Image (cartoon, rainbow, N blue to C red; front, side):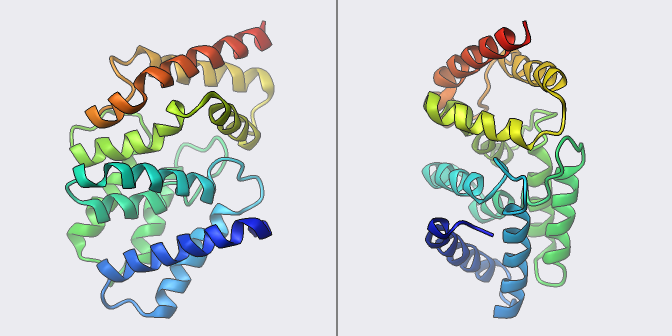
Length: 220
């Protein structure tokens, strides 16, 4: 479970999630909301979650709040934030699909079908395997990658957490991580929306170059 000093933040997250769920699932009971919240919380605080945890959700929500006025369907995007990493098996390729399925099951008989379909599509774009053209999907991708534009200290902390989650050996992890980071650098822009491009693009590229140099030195 959460450390004692994390519980106040978790309680605030729980209240925020409950309000979101009530806004969009009007037939949901308190027991229904508690069941869904517990599924999110228990997955996010599972052993080994060093990056894909409630702190990541909290950070994504802060970035979402900064951009919310520019998002066409903010409740759908926020719902996708809560669920996009709820299932996380290190090095698995279907985490997003399984997370979307968990949302679909949680929202069964409660969500409007268009709302649910939109959330599922949003969750699936966080694989970052394709470049979405839908503006809200672009915002979610940028929110998910916003930590690349954090301060160097935060970037290193997050990168260390990601590495601690992995089950690859050191050599394979470095090879795979460098390849992923190079794909980001090869993009015309890391951040798809003008809002996040202006906010983080320059620092994200500087952080990635700096971190890749460290990985190259370690590998070398």
